[in-house]
Length: 122
Image (cartoon, rainbow, N blue to C red):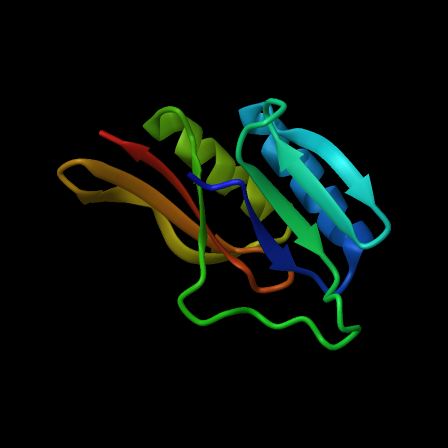
């Protein structure tokens, strides 16, 4: 259903370093790269996450209520993603933990302020 989601960055090189390292934990890698946008995924034709500088040349800003959720594969995997993101300079938006009987989640903002959720459906 989802082809790709795009989030903005103020500094593409810094964002690439963050997402290259973070998404490697879930076998994510750059699938396509153009001057101002990089697409990450795990398989050709699968859903992707793109990071980019704004097309209009204006300032990057984060959407209120916008969030990208990345499955960890397990509760340990979700926590590992959270820990790695924090190590890479993310800010805490909700420590790893059980949120509902069926949902374990952890929340961060990347260095540009984009909100990410690392989760596992329990």
